Amino acid sequence: MNPLPLHLLPDSATVDDAGRLWVGGCDVMELAEEFGTPLFIYDTDHIRARCREAVAAFGDTAVYAAKAFLCRAIAALVHEEGMRVDVSTLGEMAIALAAGVPPERLVVHGNNKSEAELRAALDAGVGMLVVDSFDEIDRLEALVDAGYPPPRVMVRITPGVEAHTHEFIRTGHDDTKFGFTVSTGAADEAVERLAASPAFDLAGIHAHIGSQVFRAESFAEAAEVIASFAVRHGLPELSVGGGLGVPYVTGEEAPAIAEWAATIRAGADAAGFDGRIWAEPGRAIVAQSAITVYRVGTIKEIPGVRTYVAVDGGMSDNPRPVLYGSGYEAFLPRAVTAPRPRVVRVVGKHCESGDVLVRDAFVPEDLRVGDLLATPVTGAYGHSMGSNYNKVLRPPVVFVSGGEARLVVRRETIEDLLATDLG
Ligand code: LLP
Image (tube, rainbow, N blue to C red):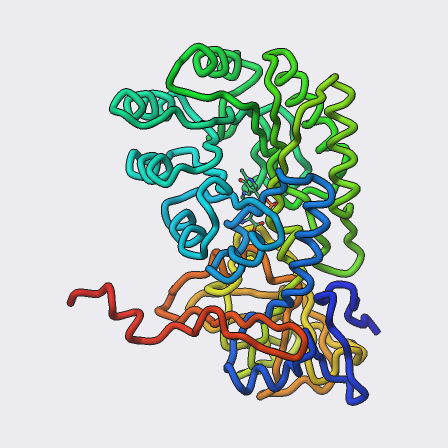
């Protein structure tokens, strides 16, 4: 009867005698009453445990990819757990710095860093800049000529490895906007130029082959290519980026962080690399730590076609199903382990048919208007890719642990919407 696979829930999730879901020692239905819906609930013990796994596996060069989910509270948390923070825009950098992450713990990315972004990174004194293009090299050289101290940099290369994942989040192949291509010689040229220039303190090589990758072999292959490249140029540091996948639905499995690290190490060893390895997991740290809770407002049964269950959020709080055809599970926090014999389409409240959250969701027989409905594994690339489409207000984020709930991002208000609108 298609029960919800409980391992998709945050680590601290429990189901009480009445069948209701608790996360971080808090009753999820009560949280929904208190903070309203849609609501992101993050289990911070889960996040801490994943950070510790990453630090155990990669040491001081474990970096949290902030694009997966960023607010001051998460930046402070991952920093406290010993992770560095990868930021890829001025906005991400500003939030990490505002959270108290020291600039030397930041790794700065971006395929089109503006002069303002580069200046901000140099002004702050960030620990590592990942150089992505010849234009960026020109811009940085000009800034150093103008008086900035030479930044410590890695060169982002595209190793020509095809990751097995969705086309939009694949980045290791040659046809990409990111980095310097190995196969055309651009990567060698960039390294030689940076090594010869007094404007740079060249540390190593960076590559990111893609995201939501399940196959450990893809990482081993990439690590070997990147490591041989680093060895060839005599560079002591390499970063494999992020990309470790997580299960979202029944039947999916992914390597654990330790296994991922071991595979990468083996690939690097095979290439004779004995320097430091950096990694930038985002999804693997936060995805499973959160659930989104919605309220069901409308149910339409179209005989012979299907049943639509509309909730009070949608593509504005989770665009992944629309963008990548990503699958999610759905369940009722009041009856977590209930059989789910019905198949319905869970949709949002936006003005387009593509606004689907779960294409074919298994749900309990007695699902009704007014129910809370939740989707697990929404901690990465949900809130962070949220929008105000249809002027829908972005949902709040609550951190839970040990029976305490802390509102870390409040719900947007109509005043927030009007704040940038000058009339
Ligand atoms: N490092 C770099 C340079 C990256 O570009 C990314 C992700 C990461 C690390 C972190 O990757 P992760 O460990 O989270 O897979 N919006 C898409 C994912 C885009 C990933 C972009 N870059 C999604 O929702 O699936």
